[in-house]
Length: 353
Image (cartoon, rainbow, N blue to C red; front, top):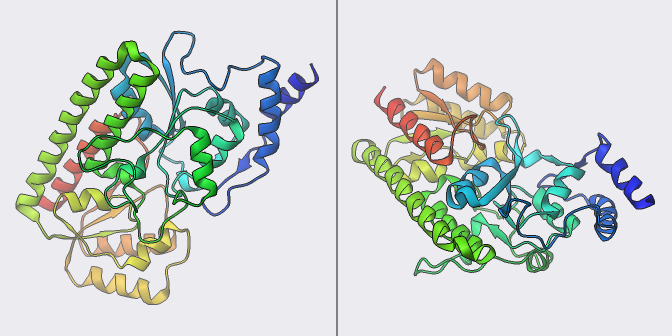
């Protein structure tokens, strides 16, 4: 009874445990210890459970982007819970709660982005005590160091168990931010295609009776990805090499897939992404680039930014350069495919303006 009372105190508290990509707060482990004790008392589901009361596999995703992909592949046989669902929330600075730990504890499958983007997941996985397999999206990107998530044959590698995942993280295998690597891999169609195949394979292992359904759903999803690539090809056919300015490297994979040129000074977008001030010389270089007339389009991330991004956005508008927004999470009412198609349409329309 004492353990149950302690657990209720933690869950009902308004206190959250801040965890950003710069600091993975160890204080969350105190709550994890209580959760583990409560689990022994039978107050929560077993961390080894792979299905909910309805027989569905419980999938926990760090953001609703990956939640949407899991829903597309899992269909009626998964219960997807996404930690971050608000378009106004910056995943880099998300503050995880004790309720998030309970969500992870009951997962059958966990999907994260990795490479420091959703670093709160590392602490949650460890603190929750989950034994669920973990799929890390960046490992399915061809630019990721080692490209460990897939081989040249396109066959996905098995997911790590949570225990293996924790050990790899302790070894420093690249789950933290990697210098020079763009972790916003959900904007890369090839990465998402490979990830969807890995999700289908893993769900098939967790729910073998529905393995054929998962494979079929993943195949249909892949066809929709092919449709996105066709749309990107149409942009490349008419506007290849067009120079684009991005205030943060969020959409870079997509604009490169469209044959466009990211002309942004690296130090500008990296400073914004890291929440640091843009060096004055870099800001001046960026403003001069905008005034040069070479930039065809500017893309901003409304979930991050500051005085410098406002300044370059205002300069772009003054120069009659189209400005569009690309977010890091799903707009309300959108699926992953519809969202990406909307982004591609926005690119096409802006370049045609």
